[in-house]
Amino acid sequence: MTTRLGFPNADAPLPELISRCVHCGLCLPTCPTFAELGVEMDSPRGRIRLMKNVWDERLEADSPAFADHMAKCLDCRACETACPSGVSFGKLMEAARSQVVAARRPSPIEAALRRAVFRGLIPSPPRLALFARFGHLSKRLGMRTVLRAIGLRHLAELLDLIPDAAPSSAALPARFAAVGPKRGTVALFTGCVMRAAFAGTNAATARVLARNGVEVLVPAAQTCCGALHAHAGERAGARELAMRNVAMLEPLAVDAFIVNAAGCGANLKEYGWLLKDTAWAERGERFSARVKDAAEYLAEVGLATAPGPVRATVAYDDPCHLIHGQKISAQPRELLGAIPELTVVPLVEADWCCGSAGTYNVTQPDLARRLGHRKAQHIMRSGAALVVTANPGCQMQIEAALRREGATTPVVHLMDLLDRAYAGG
Image (cartoon, rainbow, N blue to C red; front, side, top):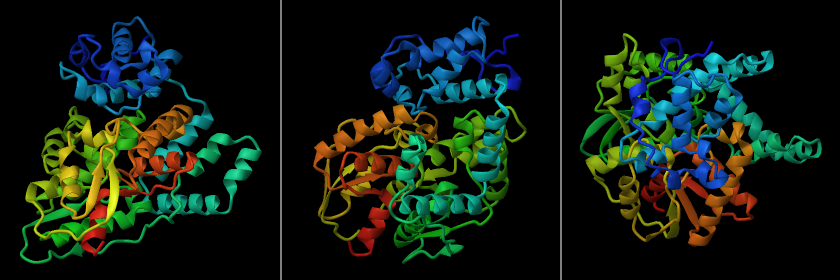
């Protein structure tokens, strides 16, 4: 029997979301997978047609073709920016993937692997930090060469994604006091990957906010936002994490919950949708209304203290879930423009996905590599000596792509660069 999109057990959206697509094709030139593959079913329009076929019971939800075309989507949401009809493609894609997971019967090995990753690893910062340290040590010991020699090329390429710098997972102080007159109080959402491998960026974010008169609280009681679960079709797990975060964080008397990872921010801002059919729907909506990206918040309140000069030529690359998911593009550039002696050069396809896309470079390594190559070529032609972005996955993917091209251009988070400017360049 066909399992239809939109049935409650599949946790998918109502057919009205599908019907918003008028098949005009304006999304096609913005879709990276369509640009690379040239296949209609690997475009947003084509994927929506497949979703409708499942809804109309003309296609099985556990069809290998349906699963393959849904899996090849980056969920970058560039099509949402281009769409004149307001199609919420990200919501549709997450629903379709949850439908695939609900309909398929995975092998015992695949089922065990998904449990280990989505239940045991990602929601546990200590385990994730240990995993990050193990990966970094393996890379330093030359395991990439060994893996390639025994034919495990994809595993070797996963090690390529690990930054050369050791992962930082040191705990942050519970509070960063505002410098000068206090202008607000916020709570920093530390995330899972950020807390396990980029704790230094979390600390930099808190310092930048504090330097601008904002008191920063770092709640110990918080967990993974659930974005990676939602993107992989693990809808129940994503909801469980969302409810835990709402319960732990909503009592805090803060002006905003600050996020510095674009993927986390987009997901946190959609808790209302994620929890829409539960008793937590209203609480989710209220929580999401208080979520702000770090650049978004700083642009709103303004810089109370001017940063110091940084003499560098940089290119800014827009993370997909910042520009397309949260519609934040001008604010990071405004902050870069506030740094004296910093030259920002334009980057071709700055709003195109680099191929990271959550776990995409793990599940679709060949396509991710092609997109990484495309991004690296544009960066090298820009003349930038430094790449700035605002998402850890993008940071790792772009850095690895540049290294494969023989370039040594560093990739830094926007908050790290601002922190450096405040520290004297």
